[in-house]
Length: 350
Image (cartoon, rainbow, N blue to C red; front, side, top):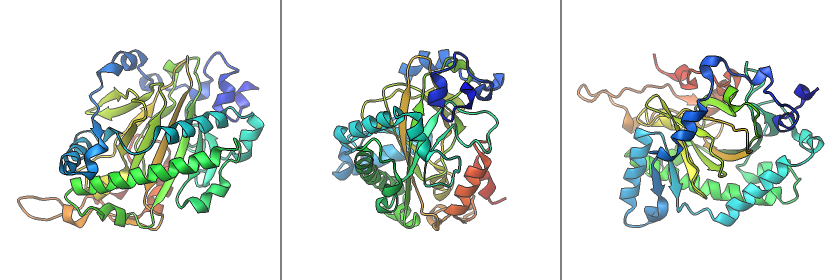
């Protein structure tokens, strides 16, 4: 049966209609005409990181802070990750998803706690409607703890992905320093709070969909980590929520889309908000996106930065969240699925 396929990629090539399990309720379907008609009108900030290490650093820091405050997301260019590294990552990603189903099934798992796995949708254990997506999930830091679990086919996958992960980590650390400074904190404040640090990566594969108006590649959600660095191919599909309006994100070649995650919202005590985003699909082209999720280590304790909380009568900024271990937050995020309410609500001080 076509519908019994483990992966959406194999299902997509065998159906002319979207199976019922992927069809969203009428009130929650993408507006494709609006997406494509507004794609070129994007107001999403694009920040040039070239001057971050020079005398103009304060200007770039201010731009990053403004983008975090007003949007919760921005794109970066001149970020230091070479086009060679990026091209190699895209190449092995495409090669991986072109492998025979029998080869991909070797690392298939629906256990969201598994450190290396290939799965479909988001979390089949919690969701009522599936997403039109396959994704390869990899834990990445420290590399030596995980790389031996990564796919060995295609043969160059581990080498290319490891180099990409090292570069993405350097960029994430650079941005976290800048975000720390933009909040008026010490440059290494967030770096220190994250403990030993964690880093995950996903390679998202969105196959062509026969009825893209009925489903999503990924429904709206916020990310549970600190920041996400998203690398997109040239096929549009990403939408971000800003002022109750879904904005399309037009891919910029070799740029990264950066979005604030739940942990930065907590550390900033709501000065910066974790942003909801989602992915649309289309009937003509496959789409690949590669998010790097930079996060605290499991034992790191997260809470609002003390300098950003006070009980002054004229400038009242109480702590909005209780302190928690990141492992607790991460378990709750995956157990609840992509619900409308933010997982952060469970950690708010009432």
